[in-house]
Length: 134
Image 1 (cartoon, rainbow, N blue to C red):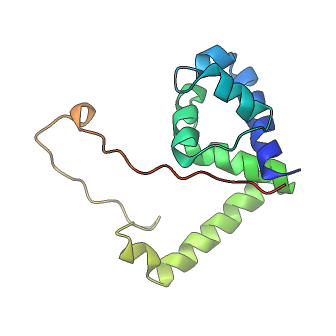
Image 2 (cartoon, rainbow, N blue to C red):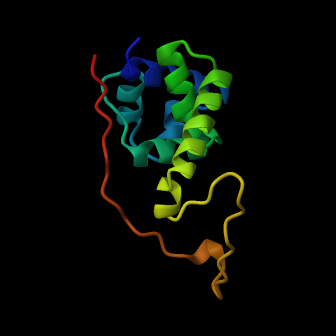
């Protein structure tokens, strides 16, 4: 199974499992685009994966992890173990520190702000599209 087909199957299964329609997901994108994703006719951007994860009530990482498992046949536990090992290695190599990302052993520093979190402005970033080879 290709990644594009795996994402299509996962999105459709998660939407149906949560009792949502394509119209419900159209709150973050058009129903036509959601339909294209579910038919593996389009590849999602990171921003779209993040947006779709909201109505599905899962983390974007969960959506990606389940897609990777569906594509590879790897168990969720094996994927998570491998990911933790890779993150630990990146932490030891200093990559996470260079990116100002705390490792799982550290608690992130709290940032004090006079503004409530819900009122913080969101900055736009460039979209990155995954192009899954078939």
